[in-house]
Length: 169
Image (cartoon, rainbow, N blue to C red):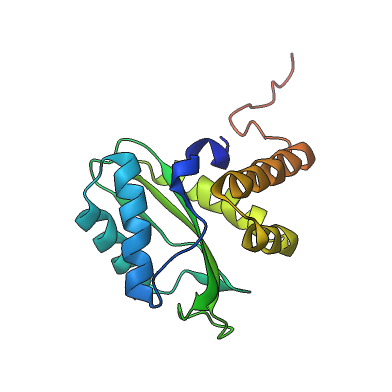
């Protein structure tokens, strides 16, 4: 399971236009709806509902909005940057400049949670966030995430949690 397999270049927005939380969610939902064929209204509603529960801004200028959407056929991610930043309710009070958004089919909670964990693990490296903020294009941003995920997977080989030890054989 690679996060970047669900991050096509057309889902990367190097410069958001919105200057408030609602506008950012609308732009993110529009990008994701266009790529998934899902209803813009439904994606925006679900992202907004999740934000009302608790802000997905994790601090250090980063947010990971996410939701599950009924009748969605595939997992899709979106990355967006705002050079000026937007107040997104982060606990550290800093404006968010980088969003990594994830939408998943409603019935796929396990995959959704594993993807969120991967995104969070990648974003723990502040160098990645800084490089993404400085990247000149969607292609460059995607390349940064691919290289970061490659490095992450090289140092964290996948576990086969389903394999059980064979006793006495």
